[in-house]
Length: 250
Image 1 (cartoon, one colour):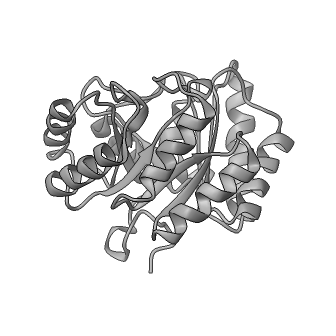
Image 2: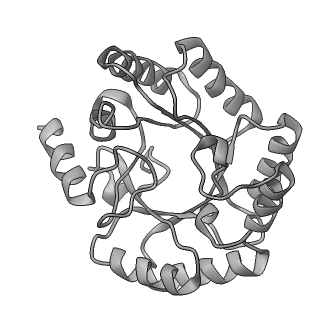
C-alpha cells in the first residue's frame, strides 16, 4: 500500500499527489470548474467552501459532493472552509465555521480540512465527528505573513498528532530567501519525525520551489492551479508543476 494517503500503489511514482482547488460561488460555477479540470486529471480536488456566495448548508455540500463525484470520479475530494484569518474568502464567525464542518461530516467526502488555530475542544469534537463518518482529517495551519519559528511549527504538528488527525498541513509566507531554506529544512525534519503524513508549502514567489520539491520536504500533497484560478499565492499551473517535479526528480 502507498504511504501517501492521497495515492494508490499504482500512482506511487508521484513525488507528491497534486491537488487543484475549486473556488466556486454557485453550482453553475462548480460544474464549469469541474468540467475544466477533467482534462488535467489531478490526484485530488479541493472544494473551497468559503468561496460560496453564502454560508454553505448541509444540503448544498451534499449536492456539491454528489456533483463533483459524478464529474470527477477518479479524484479524491477535500472539503475546506478556510477562515478569513488564514486566507479564506468569506467572513465567518466561529459558530459558522464549526457549523460548516458539521455539515461536511454528513457528506460523501474523502478528506476534510480543520484549522488547528481554533478552540481546541471544538476542533477535537469536529475532528471526531468527521472521522466517525469515515473521513480523513487534515489538521491545518496557515500564516500569510511570515514563517513561524521551528518550535511553533513543531508544536502545531504535535498538536495535530495529539488530536488524532490523519495528517497535518503547514502553509507559510517567506519574506526573504533564508526563510525558504529554513522552512524546507524544518519541513524535512518534521516529515521524518512525525507519526502522521505532512503537507508543507511556502507561499508566494519566494516559496514556489517548495511546491515542487517534495523529494526534499517529504510533503505528500502539493497544490496547483487549473488555468488562472489560484487559491493561494505562488500556485503554478498543473502542467508547470508536473514539469518541475520531474526535473527535480531526475
